[in-house]
Structures are given as C-alpha cells and as structure tokens.
Image (cartoon, rainbow, N blue to C red; front, side, top):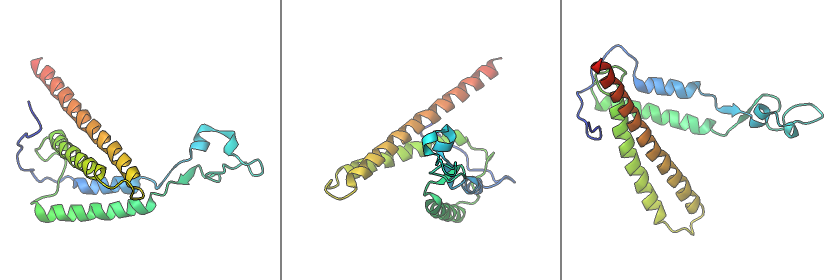
Amino acid sequence: MGYGNLQQPAPIPNDGPACWDLVIADVIAEQSTRPCDACLSGRAYFVKVSDGKCTKCRGTGQIDDGSASLRAFVLAEMRERHAYGMAKYPCALQPANGRDALADWYQEALDGAVYARQAVQEYGARDMRIPGANNDLVRIRQAYQKQLALVFTIREMIADRDEARAAKSAT
C-alpha cells in the first residue's frame, strides 16, 4: 500500500492534549545545557589541579551550549504555528484522532525532503564569494541528508507495523 498520498479521514476531536502543547512541553523540559563531555569522559587534562574542577563546566557537570536564545525563539514560533493551526482547522492535532499518525508524518517528511532539496539547489546557485555562503550550503546539504534518512526511517516503521498487523491478523 502506498502511503505517499494516502487519503485519510478528517481528525476526530477528543479529550486528549493538543500535540503542539506536548511538543512545546518537551522543548521546555529539555535543558538548555548539555552534559560536559570532559566530565562524562573523565579526561583529567580538563581538570585544574588547583581546585579539582573541570575547566569547561567549573564543576557543574554542564556547559552552556548557546541554545537558550534559539530555544526561546523556536518556542515562540511553535506557539505561533499552533495558533495558526487552531485558526485554520476545526480542531487541534491530537493523538488518537482517527488518522494514521505515521502516514501523516511520512507525507510531511516527504514534503520536507523536497523543501530541503530546493534549498540545496538555491544555495548552490549563490555566489560562493559571499562570506558564510559555502558553510550554509554544507549545513543545508547535511540537513537534506538527515531529512532523506528520516523519510526512509518512517517508511520502514510503517512497513514493519503493517507486517506485524498482517501477521497478527493471519493468526
């Protein structure tokens, strides 16, 4: 069965949470710092002899990864996107809404791959004498490859799920 253009029913509202609220809560719950690699690996050359504290994290076990301001910006955009969706559609996207979430995700991932490839093409045509243009293209190509990998991962999950369902119904 092809899932690229699978037609699905309209979502059925229920008492479950809005998926945007779940995603926003997940992002908020993530710390804006990451574990200090030096502390995790126990590399002694990062430890100051005078006070015994890691020179990267100063003994906290965590270093600021610079993502706090980006995280705040993305959270604001997530809230805007949620508001946009609430205005456009009759109900919030919720779990258990009568639709196949993997099929929806797969279709969105396919679209994301096309947008990423568009960016590769457009940035590839830019004047590489512009400062940072080549670095942008490298990052865009890397993101494109990750998007393609996501497409194949989701499709594999759908195939595995369908195979398991078929095996269960055969018994």
